[in-house]
Structures are given as structure tokens and as C-alpha cells.
Image (cartoon, rainbow, N blue to C red; front, side, top):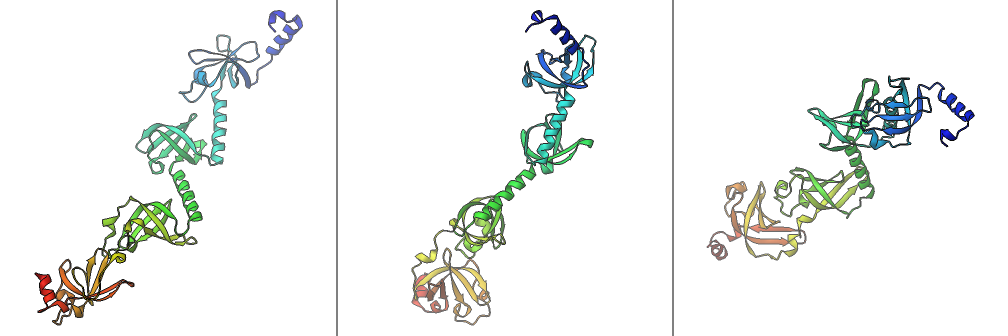
Amino acid sequence: MSEENLSFEELLNNSFEKAKKLEKQTIGTVIEINDEGEIFVDLNYKADGIIPKGEYSYDENCDPKKELKIGDKIEVEILKMNDGQGNVLLSSKKIKQKNIRETFEEKIKNNEIFEEKVSEINDKGVIVNFNGIRIFIPNSLSCGQKDKVRFKIIEYNPKDHKVIGSCKIILDEEKKKAEDDFWKNAKVGNEYEGIVSSISSYGAFIDINGAQGLLHVSEISWDRNAKVQDILKQGQIIKVKIKELDTANKRMKLSFDGKGEDPWNKLNIKVGDILRVKIKKLMPFGAFAEIEKGIDGLIHISQISEQKITKPEDKLQIGEEVNAKVIDADLENKKIELSIKELEGTSSEYSNLQN
């Protein structure tokens, strides 16, 4: 109802109402927002209130036209009863900041994840802004993002205006959850894609969702003399299968699809066959010679030469190719014994192969 239609008594009551003393903090209604960002507020008082843009928010980039509309209720603090132009000078930024801080502290209490744009980058880290609250994320706790970052608050001291965030803590928590889920569901025979995390002389450790498994060198290649670093590279993604599992101690041994088929399954040799072999390893008791890739045979020291020798090096060297005769073939147990001695001298078999 317009004031023209009000009775004298109602008009009088309204004037008394508007003459009441305003509280230091009160709630008004937004009636106008001009192009300078000034907000005019109906306080149900004889004069309207005005919030200069600088008193709306501590965040300089905050645009009241995007956050408020005509008719919205707004909580304000009275700075002056008269700004010199007949308006009540108001501020909302302290109250707004109080509400923001309460929301911020509640999120910290609940261990929530924040996601904000980077507002500043320096040599020590990055700074992000949560509704006017500056948060520093040092390089040691950052994950390298330069645009928008996900983080948690790990240190909060409002008195000293010290707020420290960490992106790394989220990655650590997510990694731990993935690892816990892995051990909970892991079974022998399960297949996974893993990342080669480290390489040693005896094998490689494979990272599967944060869990580490051992891929022994014997599971990488059938070649006993193979070097792990010649087959796998750190950071490489490979397919593996759980071979052995100890969930209580969080240990597992893996097998590798890339090892291929067992070459012994296709081997077709018998006692008496004469082969061209390559010396791969010398030991005090004899030499190991490669028959095919992944298959070695033993030449005992007594089978190296008709001459008496004290060590294999007296007649052989690593990498040398020689002819040898199969004198024992236990394919089921993957054992082959060879002899060079039986081909020495006037043996036609030896001579023909040498030629």
C-alpha cells in the first residue's frame, strides 16, 4: 500500500518506527546498486544506507552486481549515521569476512578439500585466495599447478594471518586409499598395469596403485644372463600378474607377460647332437654356454679339453663360440650337459663343424 493511501495514524506509526535508533549491526534490503559498485540499502529508517564498494568486501575483485540483486537482505554494520549527504554510512565487509571465516574454519574442521585459482606465484610457492583469505602453498607442498589448485589447510593461525595449504597431502591421502583398496582386493592371478618404480640387479619393483611388488629377474627373461636395465626402463608401464601374495605383510611377487613362452617347450635336441654354442659364464667348476636364447647348457671343466686344466679360463673366454656335443639332456628338469672334449682331436664331427 502506498503512503498516499495510509491513514494519518499509520503514517505517524511509520515515522516513529523509522525514528527508532539503529543497532550497530542490522539487516537491510538492497534497493539499488549503481555502476560505481555502491549499494543502497533500505534500513527501515528515516534515511537510507549506503555501502561504498570498498566497504562491501575485502576482496578487491568482488563485484556486488554479480553477488546481489534488488530485494536481497544484507547484514551491515553502521559506520556513521550521516555520511554528509544524508545517508547512513554502512559496511558489510567485516560481517561478510566473519561469515567467510566461519565457513573457512568449518571446512578446515571437516578436513575438506579446497579448489581455488592461483592469484600469485613467487620463488617460494604460490598464493591462492579463498574469498579474501590469502593462503600460501610452498613449493615443497605444491604439485606444480599454476592455474587452479586442489589443497587442504595444514596450518591456520588467524592472529598472525598465517594460513598454509598443501596439495601434496591430498596426493598422499589418495595414494594411501588406492593402496589400501589394492591390498583389500588383491588375489593371486589378478592382472594389473603397473609402473616400473626402480630397477636392481635382481629384478624390478613395480608400483600398482601405490603398492610395490617384486618382479624378479627370472620372471623378466628366460635368459639367465639378461640384465634387467636392458629390458625394462624406470617409469615404463607394463602388464603383470600376481604370482605370490602376502597381504598381512603387504608383499607380493609378480610375473611378466613380456617374458614370453618358455623356450624349453620348443627345444628339440637329444644326446649326441652337435651344437654351435656361445660361452656366457665361467665358473670354477665349468662354463655355461647358450644353446638358444634363454637356454644354457653346462660344460663341466672335465669336458672342456682332453688336456688337464685348472680353470675354464685356460681354454675358454666369455663370448667365444665353440662346438659342443650333447652328452645328457634332461629337458623335463631343464638340464643339458655338453662336451667339447668329445669333439677334439681327429673327430670327423669336430673337423666338419670347424670347417
